[in-house]
Image (cartoon, rainbow, N blue to C red; front, top):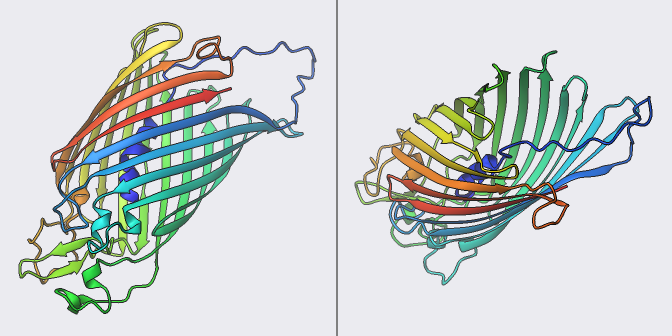
Length: 406
């Protein structure tokens, strides 16, 4: 069920400030430039999103059936900072996320029930990051701990981040290493559970809870070419092992048999990306992004994105965007009833199929000097809408609200 949050997570990452606001600095009255060591709140961000999708290729029912799903996601983060005796800045970022979703396809795991527990659920995911930075050099490092829990799984995560800047501050290198240790219940379709005597019962197995561990790294190099052009190059290798198949998803074979999804227990991923930001003038910024993805399951994908924030006034901007994705699917995919009975690995999950998709929309951002609606503490309000269509007939809409308090 974790895959349903993909589009929302991507959009969250896209919510970024269009233009930086320079905060007035207090006059220095002490020649020692003393900085308080008291822990102070720097900013609070609240993000709320409503997501709705529809389609007719549910993996739970073998690649056919409803994919109707809604998700209401909310996150709040609190950023606090203090200086140590050596003048280093210590930043603490606490984030709490709570999602509530309903999924019609999940209710088909056991269609004999009126409404199973998996049809709707709440996901809770807190995290805490500590970063120490040297403001004179721009260098920093930090650690993150995270936790996530929902109906059929829980996850523990840890990460390390490192930033290094050149002496002229025009070149920046970022490194991030992270790991997620997951445990999730192995829920089989009802007809494949132990004790069931209907069609497909010969495949019964009693699966316990199973681990799935994910390890990834991110290495990026950003460079200021000139006053107008900035570029960034990034590579993000990843490795997963454990139970990577979703066992409550059905697969149907050419001989009429039925089995639970089965995929390799190891997966290597290698995304490579580049971003170019060009300041056309003081009012228009052109953001371009390209990403190439490959893994050892045979998936290959190209993603290209264009966003053009336009500053209509000193505190109001609009940002239309468009993203295109073209994917070659895994060798293990086949549609409903088309799997070879001799196949070792098999899936009818259309997320892993050959497809292309379009995602487009726009955002508006308010950041008036006297605060939004005259409230000085409410520094910024951003509202974004996106519409997603996929060649497999899946379509979705998402509305996201971002509030920043300072």
